[in-house]
Image 1 (cartoon, protein in one colour):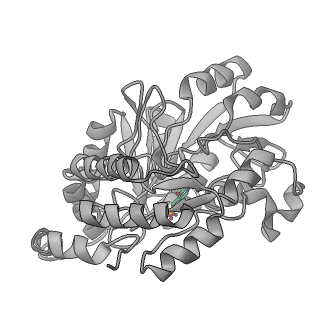
Image 2 (cartoon, rainbow, N blue to C red):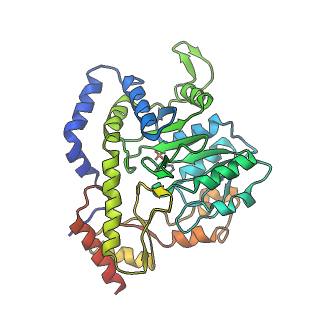
Image 3 (cartoon, rainbow, N blue to C red):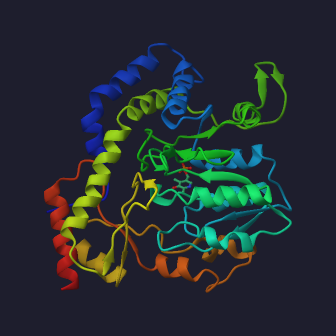
Length: 365
Ligand SMILES: *Cc1c(COP(=O)(O)O)cnc(C)c1O
């Protein structure tokens, strides 16, 4: 049996009729940039996550960059974040000129809130918690620290759409949050897209100007900005997919339950909701003994799996000037050698999950 990691082709088959309707809705109007579809989507996000403002952008990476920029983060400042994330979390900080300060993670792969205070200096301006794989960080404690030291909080909620902490949506705890609608996220566009969410009207106004060349009107440029607009077709598709997001996440949460039911070995630790979280499980990251051997074995059984990611961010060539070395974040390094994502998408059958689980059990037997 062949089991694929993700299945965007199946998603297209499933949604084809609706997607063609979206295409028709937008293209028949003859206008593709900053049309009502974008404002509608932004409104829909506000209602879904319960926040005041949302702005559609080109990508989750742009969303992070603009969040930092709108808060005035610059050279000489320090921003605290996690060494276990996608590279954009650090790239966005680097491009503001600020210094990245890493804090080690807990076994759930998220920043260890107990270690944040000792990393704070006079230059610290912000904390950027990453809700990795849609697991929400301990936002209660992180907000407490941020308030105590008067720091901004930018949530990297790229994977947090549909995740909750104490029944409050991911991305609504800090000053501003960045979301991604990359094809591999749970709420996904047909290409790159992202958005920011905030309750702060000043940040909203700054980014609104910045994403559209700083133009107040066609012939009136207030500042020099960039082009990072969410396009109308993706906005229309995202609005449709947002109506199905809860269903998608329930299916993905059910995948995890089934893996838990069928994987019988204690050599694999499966992801789990924390006490106060309802996680969206964008990826199904397990911690596996002999990870590389297991992965080869699964490949030989026609099962796709993927390592997200084998190298913590402080150990990349690009991080050399940030100034860390091997051994600085022991838990992140240990976990990066164990992470493996099993097939995980909303069209996976119980039979397929059982097959993958049986193969995992067989490997350790
Ligand atoms: C996907 C992702 C990003 C970047 O989002 P893009 O839309 O791909 O630019 C940033 N941070 C994290 C944690 C991500 O998973």
